[in-house]
Amino acid sequence: MVRTRIITIGSGLGLTAVSASALAAWEVNLTPGVTDVSRSVFDLHMTIFWICVAIALVVFGVMFWSIFHHRKSRGAQAHHFHENTVVEVIWTIIPIGILVAMAVPATATLVQMYDTSEAELDVQITGYQWKWRYDYLDHDLDFFSNLSTPREQITNEADKQENYLLEVDRHLVLPVDTKIRFLLTSNDVIHSWWVPALAVKKDAIPGFINEAWTVINEPGIYRGQCAELCGKDHGFMPVVIEAVTQDEFQQWLADAREAKAAEAAAAERVWTLDELMQQGEQVYLSACSACHLPNGEGVPGAFPALKGSPIALGDVAAHIDIVLNGKSGTAMQAFRDQLSATELAAVITYERNAWGNSLGEAVSPAQIAQLLEPTTGEAEQ
Amino acid sequence: MSDKSTFWQTLLSVLSSFFGVQSERNRERDFREGRPLHYVLTGLLMAAVFVLAVILLVRWALSLAGA
Image (cartoon, rainbow over all chains, first blue to last red; front, side):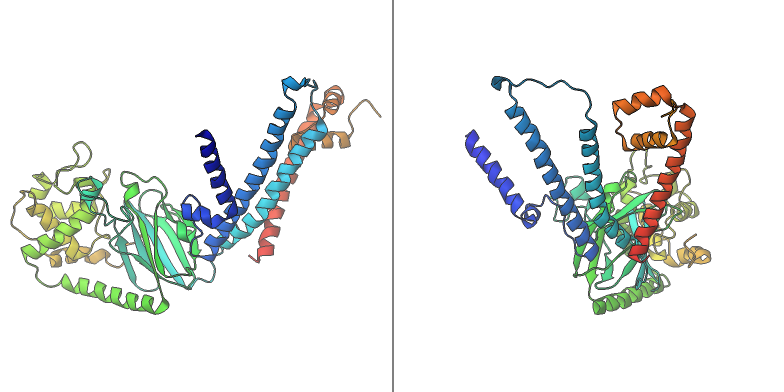
């Protein structure tokens, strides 16, 4: 029994020694990723791993050989002495040599990672509690990317689907074979934008702009997460990149800009209460329900209930004000830059007419658009 | 040899402390013959040299990378 187990473990070790791809198939290793930088990071990782293995073999080999060879039953006598400068110098110089040898390729990779020059596309990435905003700086396009995993799956009321907590409503679409520069910052606390397949992990810090870059070699979907503890929903703000060909990217840009224009035009027309309620529910679930909960009951002591609340049932101007401008000193964010006029009108209407709140009045997108007017186009500080 | 440490001996002892290994014989000699102020000053000087060396090393590495 014990012997078969030892043989199994032994052959397991033999397998891992054979190839790195076996490790990857076993999914315990770092992934090589899809960029040149991520491959050199992977190569560095493997090189250093094998150096560690070699050191371990030598050190533990000598140690176990010594223990075995100088055992008491053979009459070994301890040799009593204190300090040996030559040995001490040797065991100091060897690790220095190994560290320097590892630092040379590591430095080359680091220098490469920091070279953000000559990028063909700039994307500003802003962290929010708890979502990312992507701003295609030269293409007049920006949007928020929210978690799209249904809340029932998070609360264990439904089975969890594939890519649970790793899916968003709007992907960050990027072209392949293009040098893309990311400019990272944050709107509130420190976040970190991390996509393992690109070997990019960079802090997003309020008041600072950090740079990173990538050239994606293969089209595909690449997922990542926030890597800096940023509050209650830190684990609920994933990154999803959709890498497409140059042509598809241009087409997507045109479509996205058209949709944005249509969205702006939609704010001008008259919306019925039902339409607003329908859209409002969707907006509520993606933007508000994390704190105020899908049933509007909030979390007592932390997040106020909207069901039967004095604001949702009181003066509409005060309700609009708190949604647009937030409430300082609380977790209530200003949503004026995060949602469109239509979305804001819809969600406010929804809050005033859902879960037994029944004022029966609609807030019109045009009314909100007017309030947004003065700051439109200068959303950033 | 005089009964005071030479500058060369002080320097070597400071460098040994940077390296982390010193022989017992030299340690006893330093405590017998050395002046603390000499070691402090040499230590500060060597720390400055070390920082300068790191700066130059980084510049050299960056120039190799063409940055």
